[in-house]
Length: 430
Image 1: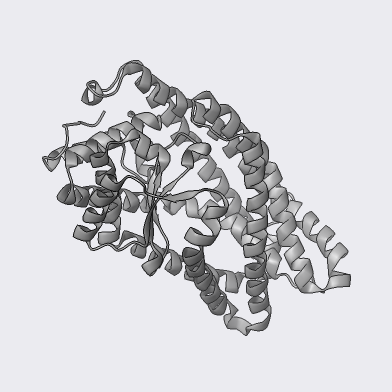
Image 2: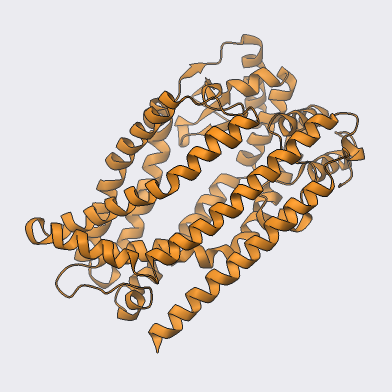
């Protein structure tokens, strides 16, 4: 009975999520296409018609491609689960590795084989996105040489970091008794904190160059802003983001005293010093309101619930058989359970994503308001308009699509909120 119930629940959730995704995506594309011909009146003085149409065309191209990737992803998921693909892979790896090398080697080999096959399945879509869509709209700066170098370095770093973590989790699952999930969760939290410490100085420099901010005038401006906001950073750095993409960004990275402020070189090239200061003030607003800490706490809480659920499911034979896998009677099934759990949970997690997106948008409004207290809201509004134009972000998204997916409010809503504070140009929703 449990087998049929879980199979039916999984299939129903997958079909429902696919229908909702397809409906929302087509709404978004239709809404953007209908508003392509005219720049919304709120932006007519600042955004040209060609720029507006480029953003619409970029959104439509990504939307059409997204429908294809969505359908392919669902097909692959069904293939891995209900059609027995994971069971076939598990049997092949187990028979080849476990008799000679033991359970741990077999389970790590299964995780590695699944990761490699998943990457190969996704590769054509990633290449098309980078070298066709991003290239067509002038955003891609990636060369084939750089792409292959990134792939090689990413694989090596992933193996160096991922395999020891996987081995630790698998060892805990087999050795820590019925409460293994609590110890595994603790290990996972510790790993995430360690990555926060290592990423800025060890991992990120493997892929990009980070130079100290050389503009003394901008540096003094930024340091004065951080002093006003009570934020201490170990350094101000410029990252060569332009070697991969024309998109612009700025971010904080690191943990505790090791925090760094990083500007993409593309951002510094597109914004004036006062606009850069306003964008940084927005990021400092996240710091002031403890948004990052709150999100980390929420993530750790949800992961604890996830580990607890997995701890129960691993002992239920119907969890495996309902999802197309036969658990082994002679070898450990922990890696198999991990893979099944990672495959299935996003299907159900999709239905709570609108709540997370709404919380994120609220945080963005709070950070904007804080930036207006510390710098010029007019500069922030001008920066947002430039970034929207340069990143070809549509000014006319479908409102329902926004509510479901957008982690940041659309430009019309952000500028309207700035205008309500008396610090930005008036902008009514499109």
